[in-house]
Amino acid sequence: MNKILIFGVGLIGGSIALSAKKSGFASDIVGVGRNQDNLNDAIKLKLIDRTSQDLKKDISEAHIIIIATPVAQFPVILQLIQPHLSSHTIITDVGSTKTDVIESAKQILGPQYSQFIGGHPIAGSEKHGATAAHIDLFKNKNVILTADQETSFEAKQKIEMLWKNAGAIVSNMSHNDHDKIFSTISHLPHLLAFSLVDMITQRKNANELLKFAASGFKDFTRIAASSPEMWKDITLANKKFILEDIQLFENQIKLLKEAIEQEDTKKILALFENASKTRNEWSK
Amino acid sequence: MNKILIFGVGLIGGSIALSAKKSGFASDIVGVGRNQDNLNDAIKLKLIDRTSQDLKKDISEAHIIIIATPVAQFPVILQLIQPHLSSHTIITDVGSTKTDVIESAKQILGPQYSQFIGGHPIAGSEKHGATAAHIDLFKNKNVILTADQETSFEAKQKIEMLWKNAGAIVSNMSHNDHDKIFSTISHLPHLLAFSLVDMITQRKNANELLKFAASGFKDFTRIAASSPEMWKDITLANKKFILEDIQLFENQIKLLKEAIEQEDTKKILALFENASKTRNEWSK
Image (cartoon, rainbow over all chains, first blue to last red; front, side):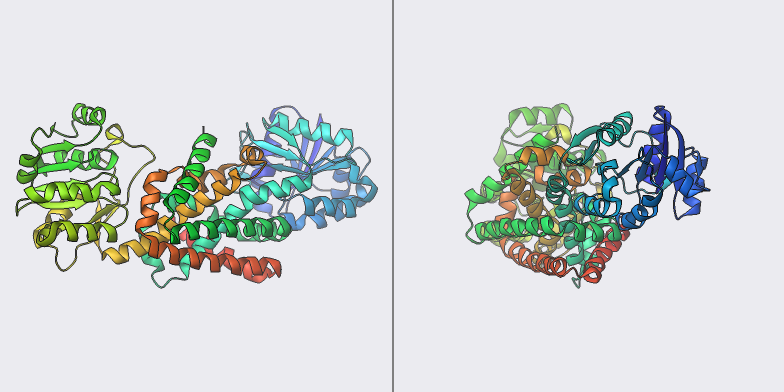
């Protein structure tokens, strides 16, 4: 039975806490956060057992420390825990980008980097905060861990167990592969959706356009309602791969534009058929 | 009470038939289509009263003719009905583009163009065919009519009534305004979604990418599962405005790319905040 210390008891942190407790994986769960109302909610909802009254003690006694705050706070939290870290404590995170997190962890934890393993649960919701947490959030969802040669066997084993107890499907890959993959399937679509909505707001007839926008637009732009702060951080953290993907997408759009200009029916149809077939098969 | 002749008794045509009958707007509804199984379904489901045994007679006796087939068939159908058209018959359509349809109608119907009024119900579904038809399909949905100076008062009045009886919110605008608006809020998003999925299929690791794609990708690309045939027609029919919108989107992406290259946090955040605010307010 594990003692777990969670920084950031929101949707993700709270849901991990809930499943760790219900599955018997954790005995004592301590929550840390900047928002006292949210921590009170987390206690009322029994996501955590208590808040920390003595952070140094809770850090040194924790079997697992989970960092589930916005990514920008990670370095500060790593610096906060590092002096009090015992040799048996495993640290993990839930950030959407991994190269930047791993670099911080290596730099700040030094020789204790072996106790750190990066994580990214591919689950979420528009909702946030402790009140949005629920035990099925990770059920049958992918969780990516980014263990490398320096990562200890204990770190890999323990964090894999943590996620499997939450019902997740655990994969391991390099932080580089992670960031390259998510640039294409997550970060690029977000940037395209933000860009389309921003473009529309610049039109004189923006209100008329939005009045007639229907369900296709609604789904396409749902991710444009995401947190600007969080996505600014992701965009800068994954700059290299995102710029590569934007370039590839620009090439793709250029080819389509040329096909339309030339009324190249065959090429346009081939592109749409390829996309439609892939999308239909994927959703099965 | 109106006699209605419908070409294409699918999701849209079938749903109009259903509401016209239930509301008492139509007495006799005759269906025409290439797919006999679909027509049999339409009779069984009581969407239509019968199929046509004498098309010339049914054309000449109809109060309203609705063309609800794929847009590519419109000119052939207009040519088919034109010789038998009485002076009291009103013709309308449900196509996603309007300039091409109006041009066909003017050319083929000649002086009887005044009896034609273009229409576009902003409603649909991934499902199609008579079995997908339902009476609430147009309830509180926008329907755009594109009457112009030549359109008769009777055409405007009758088709507005047809849609209001189906629960729709009816607006009128020029075919040009229609095609410009829908290029931005519907056609462009479809092309972006098709392009993203097509781009992913070209990657060596396409299967791995799709394996980790989650709910954001799912919603963003839902419209990439749309009919390639239909969207090829729309793209070519609305070529002019679509090319203008692609150009504007390319400029938009170029600005974002430069902001990312320069790590211009302020500019990136402003763009995301603008989009997020607009999208959140729109969905309320």
